[in-house]
Amino acid sequence: MTALPLIALVGNPNAGKSALFNALTGARQKTGNYPGVTVERHAGRLILPDGRPAELVDLPGTYSLEPTSPDEQVTRDVITGVQAGERRPDALVIVVDAGNLDNHLRFAGELIAQGIPAIIALNMIDMAERDGLTLDPARLSADLGVPVIPTVAVRKRGVEPLKDEMLTLLGKVATPPRPLEGDFGVRQRQARAFAKAAILHEAPARATTQSIDRIVLHPVGGPIILAVLLFVMFQAVFAWATPFADGIDAGVSAIHDAAFAALPPGIFRSFVADGLIAGVGAVIVFLPQILILFAFILVLETTGYMVRAAFLMDRLMASVGLSGRAFIPLLSSFACAVPGIMATRTIEDPKDRLTTILIAPLMTCSARLPVYAVIIAAFIPARNVLPGIGLQGLVLFGLYLGGIVGALVAALALRRTVTKGRGMGFMMEMPRYQMPIFKNLLLGLWQRAWVFLKRAGTIIAVTTMILWALLNFPRVDPTSGVSQVDHSIAGHIANGLAVVVEPIGFNRDISLALIPAMAAREVAVSALATTYAIDDQDESKRDQTLGERLKGSWSLPTALAFLAWFVFAPQCISTIAVVRRETNGWRWPLFMVAYLFALAYVAAGATFWLATFFGL
Image (tube, rainbow, N blue to C red; front, side):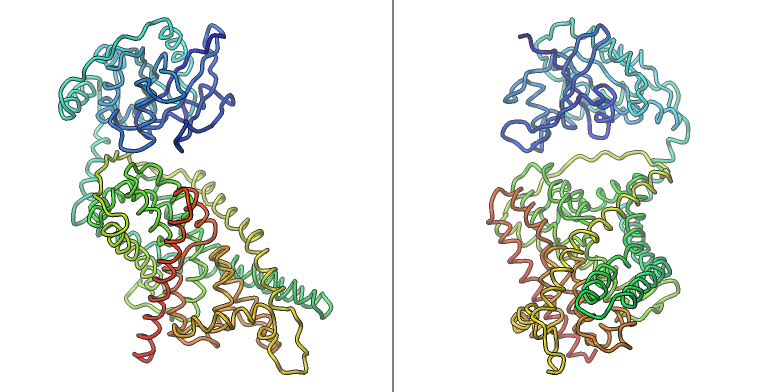
């Protein structure tokens, strides 16, 4: 049986390869892994103009054939025909960003020199034209010696002419690879010369990007602008979310009261009102804060600023022995550590990658926000320290900053001990600035809200129900004067754990919250809400919010120590599981859990002891 012709899509990251792959193959796709590595292989079937099928493989994006990561190595090995379990392609479709020819044509030149019949897909031509760039594909084709087809992959523009040229390519025979001309600098200058020759007209608007970059990437001004943006973001989380959070809180209270009034007294009413509604409702109330945080992150990503932020952080990362490649996984960990840890697959150096995995849980994930928000709202006064600068937002900013500083210090310590080695540089490509599309922004927020509400309705609800059961059984004699919580299974466990955490200012109720919080961070809030709802038989206190109950039960040093604990404490069980998978064993997950628990204990203790010493 004759194998189908194999065509490979290859090019720089962000050139639109995946969109072109989808446009060419439609639903005829399958995903697997290359043998022996965790790099995904995306392949699909393409129907050529003469009706023949061909196999199309989407290779990982890279900047050259000198790999610096497992993904890039796969691309190099497939192109050179040494990848295990993969044939050398019969033809290449080299995808380049029409608006970024300077950077993309150098790699295109390397690929053409391999001797495989090739074609250039001049992709995102519409974006280049929108930015005032008029290109001459014929001139570019003449300089490169291969056909050049303008495409807009997301709109399937240019797909049919591309297929026609593929058909022609498959009738050609590969030639032996030829040596590359000169070093990296020589090839880059040649790419710029080809790009300049292919530009028929360039509008002044393109110069705007360079002007903005001169400001936001300035060695001194750039970091200041980044710090100001982050500061404003955390101020907004509190200042803008309050009315919406109050509205949700009022709705949850109304549902709680309605359930309490409708159901007959007894264990079932306690389960519904004090367990399910009080526990899950205490977490849902923080939805506005999470959406505001993600709105800022989405805007920074879609405008193209987030990559600039990575560039600004590169020098700082190098100072603690990390590659600049570590920034993107760590940035992803602000949303959730699980995708952040999986994103470390792009880091080639094993020790560099391991260090990034071990410090990723120190990035403040969105699940910590409800914990921070409830404690800050209860114990930090809602007043301005300067015009327009609220104290609550300032404390939240400090907690996020504490996680970042803790991660950098941990990275420095790890790189000088258990993961000793040198950090590596990396190449970064700056995308053009874009205005965010409102519809896409709303879609992104809806997806984040759905994930949050789904967690509230599944893992948080289930954990809350289990905790409610552990708090309610065995039942105490109401006439005994003994607390139901102390008498329960959970109470006995918490009282045992409290012996360990009492020195750092934690009480039995906090001990109760720490154990289920391993399932998900937000559960700490629902656990506290359920605990106080069950143990509070005073009808007048049922209308109090969780913050009011905490304020009446905890001292300020205890509250500050609780915040310090959550800055450093290990992530949820899902994070530990993905670390185990990415490191192929239990050694490093257990090391991570041990050092983060130790760090959290010391940080919480130091905070409590200092706050008590200063009389706070």
